[in-house]
Image 1: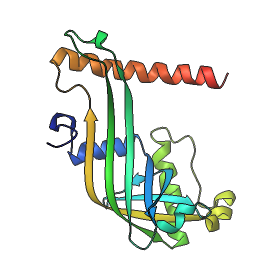
Image 2 (image 1 turned 90 degrees about the horizontal axis):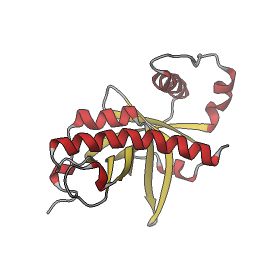
Image 3 (image 1 turned 180 degrees about the vertical axis):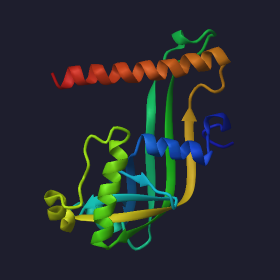
Image 4 (image 1 turned 135 degrees about the vertical axis):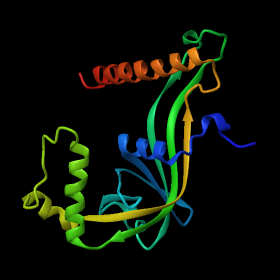
Amino acid sequence: MSYPPKHHQDNTITHLIEVIKTYPLATLISVKDNVPYITHLPLIYNESGKLIGHIDINNPQAELLKNNNDITIIFSGPQCYISPSIYSTKQLPTWNYIKVHLKGKVKAIESKDALKQSLITMTEFLEAPDHKYVLEPDNKSMNTYLNYIEMFEISIDSWEGKFKLSQDKKPEDIDNAKAELVRANKESVEAFLEKCFN
């Protein structure tokens, strides 16, 4: 039996790319001597089908993001607890979520010109659609930090989408679960910020 069940899997590449583009903060997992190294970084999916990222040279994982090393990447979409109270039929409590798991090979990109352009391109992507800030090529801060940042690219070998969204329920309950995902995420962020940063 496959896990998660087939109705909770979505391996349609366009759907997985949409998760990557909408939620670009990735969890990167490398292993050295049976010890996992984990870093959270934004990654950009480019037109050649590769993921592009940048890492501080002082990060211990930086040395593992080169030489065609193996890497696992996780992208996380929205998630929330689903109460049985939202369903029109009797159910048990559950948790709905969207995750994308990728495996691939990572290699360093040594060119400082490529790094600089990549930082500009990533900023442009993340500033969309309003582009209130533009990272200019002559930005002094960026040029100062180029020697402390390494660029890498990941070639993706395998894709796995885990979309647990109450797909095994009645259409009405599927819609209720989607609405709850939207409501719960909005309210939980507001409540968290109010509690921790006020």
